[in-house]
Image 1 (tube, helix red, strand yellow):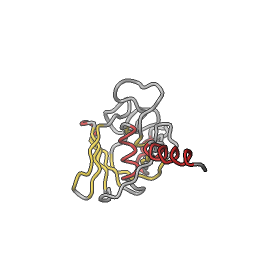
Image 2 (tube, helix red, strand yellow):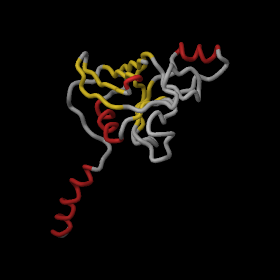
Image 3 (cartoon, one colour):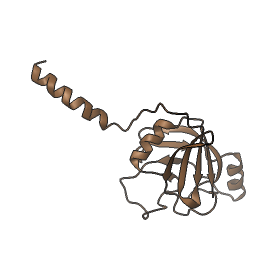
Image 4 (cartoon, helix red, strand yellow):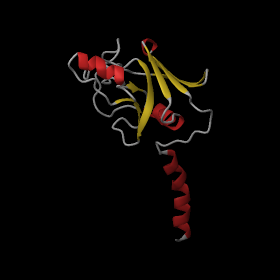
Length: 163
């Protein structure tokens, strides 16, 4: 490599690192996520201490607990972060363990599927149903916030979703 190429590479490398959607986090462990649907807020906690709070968007039918596929509701209750999607259509996403055994039984009694694929995710580049409550039951934040959440939260973290 000649000197000019080395200088150019040295100038570009920091810029390339800044554009990555994958961030690092070395702060206190996130031990619980709390979602308050009526307040449109989500909190990352370390024990009882709030580490971060976020404004959120919800399913297009935000009131009530998700019961069946396609109802547009965000589930309520205790679930867990059970998977990560670095290639999400919504920037990055963390899977929520919906449906649980109770959710499956309720949907079965209604003769329907409980649905699934409920995530905390970033924004979409596609059309939204409106300025809020545009997801199909997921919890949405900005892409930049999702980068932080993705770095902070580990699989197995409990998430409590309240009305």
